[in-house]
Length: 331
Image 1: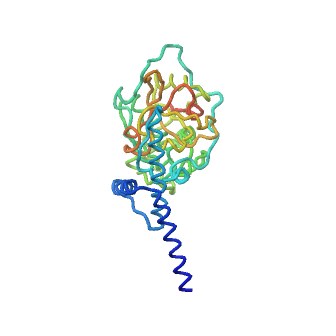
Image 2: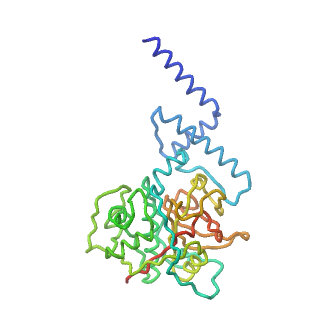
């Protein structure tokens, strides 16, 4: 039995060393520096998997950046995760058909400006937040939009409670950390008669019991406006004339490593049943002839362009125009 154990140990060790030899000393050193930067610690069993995932991603990024794409990729806090692992932590686990085949937004007939950025119009957009390891992006898209709508109308920018939506909005086809949709969250706020401030109902990044207190409600929704499926001009009209707009789209592997430029992907899905991440369009523009949306994400400021990204506009890229919506605030 002792000999058998020794042989097994030698096999495991040789297998591990053999798998690591495909990586250079420089690559392994780079990974260890990245671990320190991002405060990562692994068990001995997990270390090889993380190293392999990281270096494969690093190599993929280098190939991508040398190929002349419209956007650049880079390493970040997610670089040790496979896409499957990332999806289980950060994206919607229960895809829903979010389309509004006939929306209620009424577009104007006038000319729209070439460039809009609500961050530059005034104090209308709250700082980028971080959803952590919970598929609650839909709640951040919801609060971000409602925060801006109220600020534009009143001049007062107040941070609202994502955790209340995680805990309390399940009767409106939402699933807490497993996902939901901004349009359904707006409906919840409307019929619940209010949403608390983040300071009164702090974010925890996990599912919990509903602790809503009506006396602390600080934001109210009069109605929910859905934009007709695939009507990007309608989205543009709403963002230009009214306020930022919530939308959802299909995140694929390369998006996790986005750092700058205008994101596009010919392989992502454009149908409303495949969207898996909700975000907030705060503006739009044109760069070297390429039209783009300016989008606020919920993965912290160390991701992307200080927490934001640009994505190609006018082609329903990754289904971004499948289920856009915004609330009308009750003031």
